[in-house]
Length: 447
Image 1 (cartoon, rainbow, N blue to C red):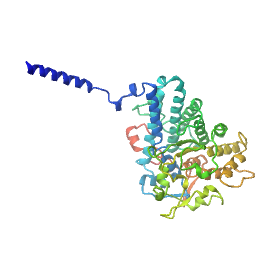
Image 2 (image 1 turned 180 degrees about the horizontal axis):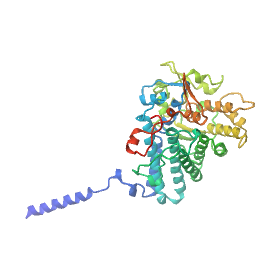
Image 3 (image 1 turned 180 degrees about the vertical axis):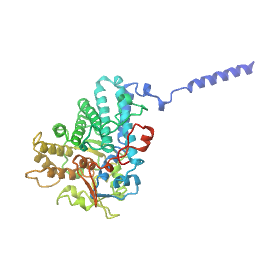
Image 4 (image 1 turned 120 degrees about the horizontal axis):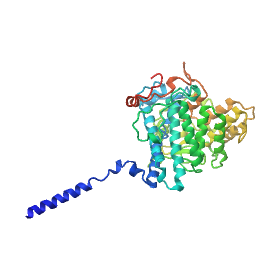
């Protein structure tokens, strides 16, 4: 009898344990829990920012790859990472790991943003617009990076037939559907829609590392500039400047290698415990903790005027004798994505092209940039070449080179080789593993 009683007690205990073991896995909770309340949705939104800061995206690689793919004779990549070297040499293959990482990381951010947008109804009403604006901002700026690298530029024309990238919206979140590429025009229309709505819902800055009304306007100015829509690009840049929230630093060197400054409209925070700065990894000398993979050539240095403080920021690597840029010498310096100086130069260029003076005369805007680096003010007559030269030098080695080359329809010249702005080799291939999974994805020409 005692044995029977013990048996039933043991059996009951095992059944009770079995019930407890059926608890939901916290790492695989699904939307029902992960997006069930205000706190969880905001935590998910923070996850989107974290994904944006990955090395493959704004943790540095999008900036680095823009500079290397359109390097011309200004810089040399001497590193040993084959996939990066192939980007520099314009010998990219569909199996390039860096291209694949950009695609995967980009769509991860977009998917997280879409998850947030799907759950706005549970967000506290007072915060709902801001949360929506942040998610749209993140989706818009990542989609912009993807279309710039994986599609022919807007300036190549045929925007209604040239293929862009897939557009993943809320209804596509967590989907395994075989979504095809949309046209370049459709992608740009979606980006503008996302960023325009975001600008209307976001709070004013500064908010280091977070989306703001001014950051959305700044990215809109980039988008419109890439499209050659100079009126909208001018007005968006002007909104940022006229906000009065941001200001140029007195010392050019102080813009870099530290935390968020009054000049930073959007940046990626990096600290000893979080974040990555791959621009430092590849551009800094070994004595500064980097790899010393990017060498600045005399062809670039000769573009600066004597006395230009931007020229003084370059330094000689004592280990190799090569010249490096001093913009990326601190491993824990924030990755600068948009600085106010860019807005002045965009407004100047657009006003000049349109013969307008919205916000300021183009000459005054250019001289704002020149005065800050110790150069004499230009007295006129101002030329478009003056403005573009100032833009090239002010924003050098910050990730603008490829996109400016393409929108300006310039050739990239490397010795005897000339790469037109719309050369297929200046566009990333759709990653082969994506095509293997989704046969609806059409590969780019040349791959």
